Every structure is written in structure tokens, then in C-alpha cells.
Amino acid sequence: MRHVIALDVGGTGMKAALVGADGTLLHEARRATGRERGAKAVVETILGFAEELRALGQERYGEPAAAAGVAVPGIVDAENGIAVYAANLGWRDVPMRELLSRRLDGIPVALGHDVRTGGLAEGRIGAGNGADRFLFVPLGTGIAGAIGIGDRIEAGAHGYAGEIGHIVVRPGGTDCGCGQRGCLERYASASAVSLAWAEAGGDPDADAADCAKAVESGDPTAVRVWQDAVDALADGLVTALTLLDPRTLIIGGGLAEAGETLFTPLRAAVEERVTFQKLPAIVPAALGDTAGCLGAGLLAWDLLSLDSEVSA
Image 1 (cartoon, rainbow, N blue to C red):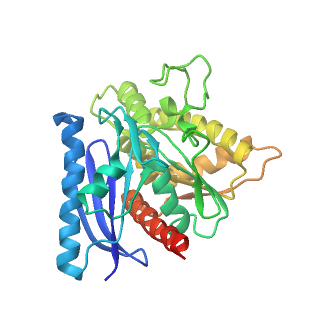
Image 2 (image 1 turned 30 degrees about the horizontal axis):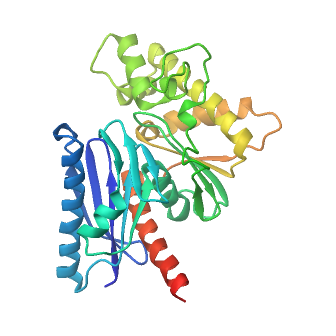
């Protein structure tokens, strides 16, 4: 059976899969990234993981993987196959495509940015399926975005498109690691809500999920913390939809797991802020934490399709 290797590399864990031509996950596996061992060890773990998947595919399906796709965090030069920089993993200018292709006996390899790759999957086979314009926004440790146009994700002239987490929503506000103050992700990411709720409730171990549960039980302090985050998020999203005019707005990541506790007030907050703009459908992501892996598989299949077109 023809298949490809898909890898989604995160700051703490890696997800991998063998993906069939119809997008089916034929085999799934997970492994710790092991960033505490340093950047070189992380890269070797990625290469070794891919090599194991290749051997598994050969054994199980009678042929090696036809291609591989890998999604990584940070700054990515997808065109040249280079993982430029990832603060959480400590690497710089890793020629990931070349290293993986060499380890996998020369098969073609596609490299993508983790959020844009997840957005590709959500757009084609997830919550954005059928939408010609969408914006995918995962609310996790930080906030990023993937701009979907037709059947592709817009990376921008320099690969930085979609950094919605660094729209300034509270001028002069909290310091952000990017060097600005008042960035969206400092107010509306899962980690920001966790911090705000821990401070408000006096429990250093409390997190965003705890805050959501307290909101559902009617705790007024939790409601205030949650609404502050929702208001900041709505401000950032309205700025984004004013610029991009998406048909569908897909919200994912850890904060979206709160379901309607998030979506009901968020839809209301966005609606009350729009004036001339067209209100997009605001929907939860459909693929969960498999989006990156599925997207990496799509990148690999796209690469094979492109090679076939060039050969023809």
C-alpha cells in the first residue's frame, strides 16, 4: 500500500504517522522530543523516529514510504527545507529536509511550520472543509494563525504570515517575549488564562481548564478572568477579519476544549465589535492534536503530486 511518513514535532512531544493516499492514518506513534538533551539530540531523535517508521511501513505494506512530511515550530524556511530557529528546541539553521531525505534513502521530504501545517489539515479535511477563505487560530501556550486561501496556506513573503498572537490589543500592556507590550497572546492564550486564574484564585497550580470549570459553576472571579480573555481575543480576531475577510474562523488549541464556555461569549463579543465587516462562521477545530500530523502527511502527498506534474 502506498503511504507517506508524517511527523509533527512539538516542544515536548512528537507525533508521527504513516498516512495513506486518502488521508487515513494507517499507524500512529508518539515520542518525547527530549529537548533537555540539546538541539543535536532532538534532531537525531526526529531522524531516528522517521527511520523506524520507514522500516515499519516496509514490513507492514511491502514497500517503503513514497515521501515524508515534517512540521516543526518556530521560524521555518519551507522553500529551502531549513528549520531556521526554534526557541523551545534550541536549534538554528537545521537543514531538516536534507537530513531526513538522506536518512530515508533519498525520498522527497516536505518541511512545514507547525501551525500552518495544522491549518492545512483543518482547511482541507477538518472544520474548514469547503471554505475558500479561512483563518485557523490555535490557542495554546501562545497564539498563532494559519491563513487559508483556496487549497493552500499563505506563508507570506518571509514566512511570517499569520502571527496573530502579536497583534497589540492592549497598548502599553504586559511585556511580550517578542519585544512588544500588550500582545494578544499575553491575554488570551491558554497559558495567559492559566496565569491570570492562578493569580486571581491564589492557587499556583490552577490552569485554564480549572478556570473554565469555575466559569461553568458561576464563580464570579472566574467569569471576570475568562471574560477579560474573551474580550482580548475578540479584539484581535476582529482586527484579523478586517484585514483578511475569512469565510470561516476556526479556533483550536487547549482553550477551545472548553467548548461553548468559550464559543458562546466569543461569538457574542466578535459580533458586537463588527461594523461593516462580514461576520464569519466561528467554529471549533475538528482534528484536535492530530492536525499537525495529518497536515504533514498532506504536505508529503502534495510533494508527490508536484513531482508527478513536473515529470509529466
